[in-house]
Length: 88
Image (cartoon, rainbow, N blue to C red; front, side, top):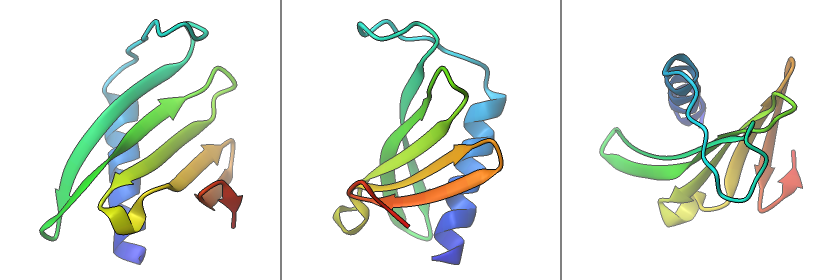
């Protein structure tokens, strides 16, 4: 689990340093959203990365199936882990 969190942190840093890409999907234009895929220790990971207009970041995993709906939310100095919307 610790390795997965390190991997997710690296993905977050990568997306934050790549600049801002705005998508018009009927949402507020200050919202950033992208999909990603990565390989870590032979495991293919897919998910979504978003930033809301209040400055919160969220990574939601969609693959592998065992991690589907696992999310990491970061706002200010608070890191929140969620599984299927349940906060831990």
